[in-house]
Length: 185
Figure 1 (tube, rainbow, N blue to C red):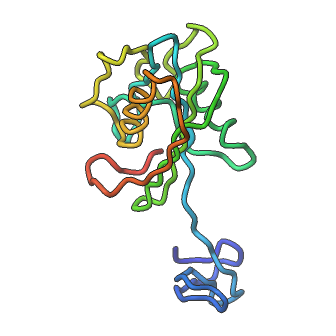
Figure 2: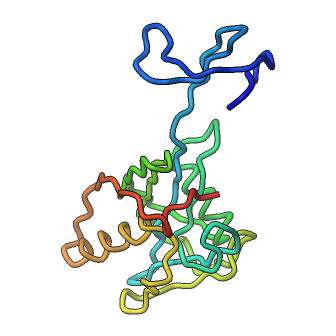
């Protein structure tokens, strides 16, 4: 950050009074510019024993498979963001959403939150950000072609939990891995 988005003057980094972190502060109006993590919200949509995945039509990781997910917008709840992203990417309506994984990705300043959800119908299609959308049985998941580790981890947890039909909310963090953890867009 170089300039204040309120007054246009230059900013510098220092720790403001009463704070403990380095922040961008306007040299003119003293506005503190906080930069906080982005929330990525998505769904793990199911139909019977199958899971719905989308092949990405955009970077990063174009051509790789993912769960429908994307950045939360201002003014919406995390659940609404997950529903919206599923509709945008897979043209699918989901129901019975239950929060499932909360995965911190601190090295790229993101938090990924996935809900388990059921497809309302088999009426789905590739949205603008997807090349194709398909249902997969566990044995057919294209593990080596998954776009993000948070997606892989959510699917691993789901298939491990499914035999007992007990789905605890899982909260964990992932460490950096250069090739897989480029920020989602």
